[in-house]
Length: 447
Image 1 (cartoon, rainbow, N blue to C red):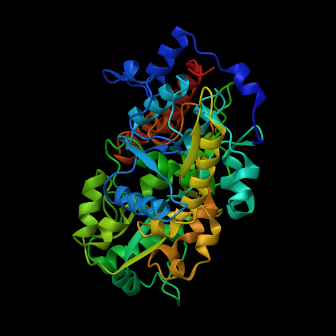
Image 2 (image 1 turned 180 degrees about the horizontal axis):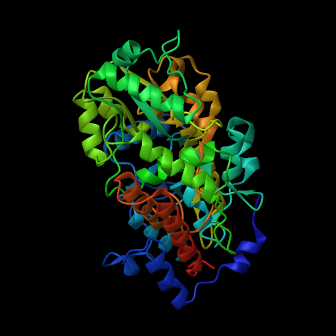
């Protein structure tokens, strides 16, 4: 096997103080009882080359993952799999970090790509072997370049993306047709400017007889950051988090928050909805369009509304869509067995080839050959927002950022008062900068 990372073994040493700091700060939450005792023990079940898999998929996604794993487990070359499903959120990432720190982690785990800067630099992940992946039919040319780039650390591949799951818009096709906001192929006409977006939402509201655009954000730990991150990237500005301090274009950030205040003015579009309130308003036909993650597709489709979808609206000129990517990683093993590592690579390659099944839930396969399959073009409305995968904007790379992180929560809470009309855009951006500075001042638990 090639692709070893010689510096990693030298770098990664876990003393007791660092181990405890890692456990307490990786998620910003206290450990669950018994975790310390359990992290050094062998994972339950499995034998021979049976692979131990950790993921965070429950509900509909969990069932689809079951189906994919059943498929790759069949036949004479099928896998023996020992799957552990853990609750999604900060606790998942704490447990994964603890297992890797103990060197007794599962063979393969799922990790949001935005969380990789908190794991790979500290030696909590082992690199993939590009030659092995190629042997099983997976190469860098099979992925969107930007996504592949984010899967690297210092030029070495530490994650293999399974999907992108972007923040997009769904809309009622009948209402959108009456509002005249679709092109000849039934696709949403992208506004391209703040004024045009305000006109689009007003037209939708008039045709709906309710709200134009629904957005749930009150007390949500991520929604305000998602919509801000997309719009801020559309201005062409960069949101940087170097150790020297936040590198944020505050003028661009104020433009974005000011636009959001104008868009969600409490008249054309409500400004006080929480996440589930926005979903309920759309499913009860009290709004024409909703800004939400594509993972809500199964819920929205079940309503019977004639559903359209598009990448998140282009407002500031440069198309960009906030997203993340469920990715496969190889958590650090103290003494990885070459045969099991080979099976792990073969398993990842096999699962990528099953991602048409994964796409049925709304996720966009990262493995591009699947997008070329006739079955994907038939997926409606998924095929209407496929390009969102090429416009992906992840969180800025920092050990404390990423899905389910305290960073997303703090950014969202900083923006919320401005959307509720209780703070100015300038005040909201000022708080975002201070929150970023505070996070940068905190010690990285894996260094």
